[in-house]
Length: 98
Image (cartoon, rainbow, N blue to C red; front, side, top):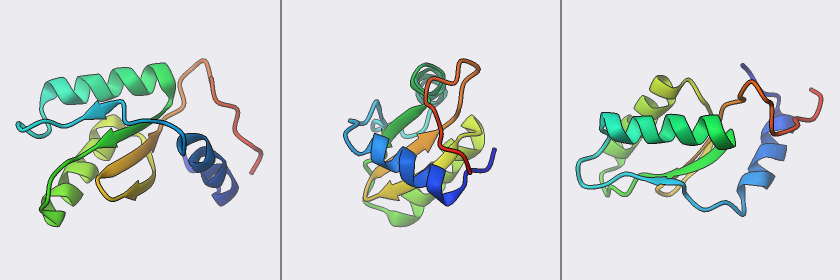
């Protein structure tokens, strides 16, 4: 699913007030963390994930892995926070037309 710039801006606006739903721990990206992200995406569609690591390269690799494994759309990453969107079958979030 590809989003237009208008749709991305709309979703970023909705995500602004959200708190991170999932935060990676000391063990990094584990199967359990991925399962939690999957569940949160299925339930909410739009989530924030916190990746608290000081190494930029490692943070980038973790974020790329999350996007690849969940097949979610990356809206933005600011600091240690990654904003993801994946539409569910119920389509809880109404997207503007392209």
